[in-house]
Length: 419
Length: 141
Image (tube, rainbow over all chains, first blue to last red; front, side, top):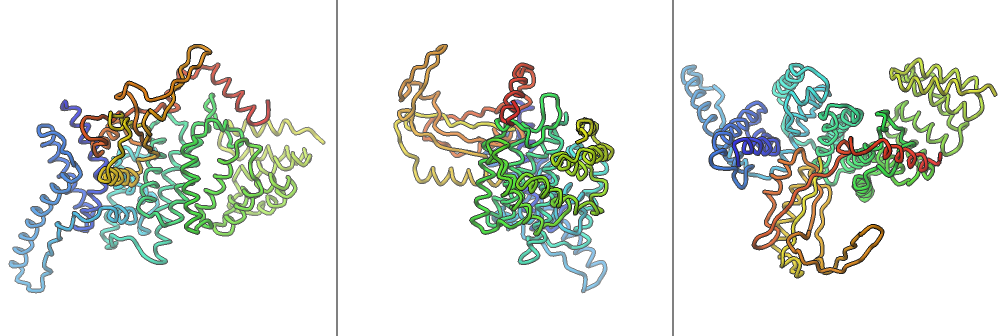
């Protein structure tokens, strides 16, 4: 192996092993910065040794042993300093420095990763901080990569990570997976962060920067990892199913001209059947666990209806409308209501859909949302109320920020003939 | 990126020798690591080529040949589909794989074509066909 090859191999091993290494070290030393420092030390040792000795057969274990040895040295040194200070203070009450048991590092690492995810997504942190810390600690992404992915300046992300770690230390956040009712709330935050990362990459699939689509893959990997660690949590599998099915459409979402293609107009032959299969399988698993009423499971079930339809016409709209009705109950939001209205209009006709949309017109949250008049316009047009439809298409055109969408809306407005 | 990881056949695998309990346990442990790392999308073992068939194409002609096939080392005995960050990562995972057979054997890693790879090859004509198919599927043709 050439020098360059070895360096690439080390970098690769590092990315794969860093999360497990840091997670195990945090469990023992209870300090993210110290854990990262020890892990980095082990990396430096690998960079020194491996080019001559070759990459060991079990690089993860090598890094762990090295980090442990360095940790023991460092902590002994600290202990010594502490003792000296205590002696100088002459204070018998001086809190003794307790030596963490680094031997305990060899325990099962699965739980460590789980604890790390829950720590990175702790409610004491802002969503932005949760995302940055999760990608840094679990995705092994560098600060520069996270900054590029989120189109943010690198110092901003660096600062966000530093502050997040300080907050966790100041609040003495325990490094643990919560139990009971607390688990549900915290798990929702964890899933929210993963889905946010996914969407950040998904909406940008057409972009030039490879980092953003890579976010999608990273979120999928995190989701799959989490499902591997918590195979009995229906919402974890629900989110995974949702992401797999959405990802299955990524090749069909952009036309030859680079313009987005709506779901109903996509070439279904381009949908990735392997990912659909994986999504449907995860959803079946959700069913076996009896968790089909969770918000992610319901969204996945809706996505599955589209995935199962071989043509747009074959879509099971009554089922989608029913699923939206349930989603509106467990996770009420005006956007869900609007989607439900569309599904109802497809299942029962435009009049039924319009009644639901009209009920949303006073909704403050949708005041500037161009899709409300756009959906309304479409329903009015289908009902033959052309003048009203034209006015609504024009209103939608005025609200959208997207030039291509505006063009489509104005075109449709022009197409409304007085009836 | 995605890659297919193929386990090359050996004389023993072609002879239908079944894996030992130890190997099955080791492979299961390896697969578990792959799953927990979010890497493994699919994976299967293949029966010997004696149970396979091959279809040869020559213009419009088709001829079917029954297995077994002669070139053992070129045959596939099993495969995985992985989602990895790089070929280096795929390579590192393969290094960690328990030896799939006794004696000499090999595993091959091949990256999959992704949509972007077709950029140049997907000509405007092919794009047009795709558009037409899309229209047909949508019932608008």
